[in-house]
Every structure is written in structure tokens, then in C-alpha cells.
Length: 209
Image (cartoon, rainbow, N blue to C red):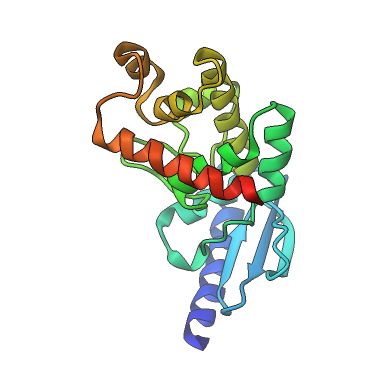
């Protein structure tokens, strides 16, 4: 455990220097470093509300600190299903979208990893494609708040399109709205069918809370 702690600390220091001197870096974004119960640390550009995390350091840091963790270094990420609850709840409420549905999709898409990246280029908590985000007026998908904003806006669009039928909304989030329209329902893709069942199961669990 001690070895992991040292490694994380050294890496964070190196990252801070890289970000500080990165070409074109802005100096207006806040950086937060938290220590987890197991002694490892995570860095984020969003203040987390988890009572089990200890805030180690905060300060202004070059914009885009989230890009750091795209390196897949496990020291910067630990699964926590409740870390973004306040943020999800606020954004979902603003757009009149079901909190449980949004959280279930995040669970299925990224397992709450704000730095997840798919082979197709989808990014962040809600695995949003950059072109989808731009269509809904959102940039910087490494920022958890903006990522959720883009995903929620897309869910709202799909809900209107499919008249709030959640199984179709979920299927479209995975396979694309055109595939759902073309097949007049959940597409006959094993991946999408499994995805719909998984998200609905997660949604039932989160609706209880």
C-alpha cells in the first residue's frame, strides 16, 4: 500500500508540472487531489462529494486536467458509484430527465470512470462522441459536468423522439437513433439487446435510492 501511495504522489507531481508548462494551457481551471481510504490518490477537475475521500490539495491549474488520466494509469481512478450523484441529480433535474436512467447509463457506459475512452472515440462518464456533444452545444468531454450535460441533452432528445419509451431510448443510446427507427424497435444486435437489459436493471436499482 505504501508503494502505491508513493507512486501516485510522484506521478501527480509530474503531471502538475506537465500541465503547468503545456503549450497553450489556460490557468483558470481548479484541480482537486483526493486521497482514498486505501491510500491511493485521484486527481479531478470537479469537486467530489464523497465523505470517504480526503481532500489533499486544491488550486488553480491549467485547463484540461482531465486529459491526464486518459493515460490509463489506474492510480488516478477508483470506482465509486456515488461520487457524481449530486452532479447527475442537478443536471438531470434541469432537463427533466430521470436521475436513475442517467446514472444507469453511466454505469453501463463507463462504470463511473470520468476518463474512459472507447475505441470509437466516445469519451467520459457517458461515453459521448465529440460530434454528438457538439450537436448539443457541449465541449470538453473530459469535464464530468460537461460530459453529463451532453449525455443528458442527448437522452432528452431521444426521449422526445421515442415518446419516453425507455427501452427505445436506451437502445438508441447504444446503437443510434437511426438503427432503432429502421428496425422499428430494439435492433437485433446482441450487444444492444444485452445493453438494454443491463441498463434497465441498473435503473431499477438506482430508482430505489
